[in-house]
Image (cartoon, rainbow, N blue to C red):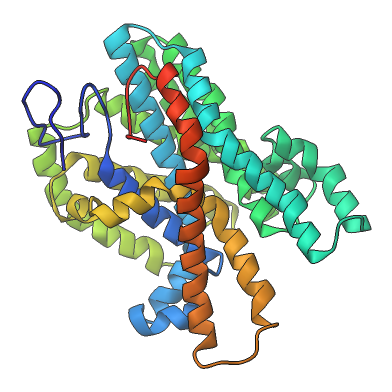
Length: 394
């Protein structure tokens, strides 16, 4: 899928461009599927309900390994942010760091702080826990870190939070910390040194995760630790540096089209194999490497080829759902919490579980769409004052 680029030429390969715009609609489709993995992992659709459609083994694998969707979000963030920065440098000769951070604030902060308010105020108020010792402990241990985008560290060092609507914010915290680092790497490091530096940092992260896993074999110390995810985030940066500010070529497209099939086999292997990132130090170290290798290959093939994979992900409904995927991610645990709060209070009726499952997904999409069009877009529209390379249309 492509648009005119303002010169009368239509790009067959790479991002859509209109008046200098860089946008990959197929990656929005991929965002939606990354969200669906997380949604399944968090129990939005129970395995027993999914089994008749995909089989018991596939349903169980998606349920157990759905957290891989978060890793895919990390790769996409690293790739897209770096590609935009490289394009800005290519067109203007420098990176405007202040403009970058303001754009990130306008995109991330409004919905993030709304979700913080839901988790620390609304849900405890509905459940009647405000003022209890547990609630005071929650505020003392986690409120300040979450307000400062450090909630993943309080969860790693102190322990998890009692509400899943808050716990999902850990990955947003990791990404926000990452956004402080990536533009500096592009703006301050010379072009000839960037690729080597990123490779060194990835290797250092893998090595650090190995020794950290030996010293602290507790999963929570790995899961929420920013440094343990740096190689995944940097793998997206690495792909962007390899592809450059204008990804895609005819030769690369031909190769990518054939590589779709090995990628499909790799996806089956990844999800059909044993649980990931558990049991041994080696598994807690190398499984994350295999995940981001798979994820980088997936993103590379999607943005390079014109085959069935890219065409499927560029389907308009998937693209739209990917466009509101930030809201889908932030609200889905709120919708799941609402379903679990209601299901024991409602009397039995035919197909109760199935209807509540459908209602939960509908509520997630509805909340995300309402949030995007009535709330988030007000802030996204302000980004135009600090935009140097236009990306996805608001």
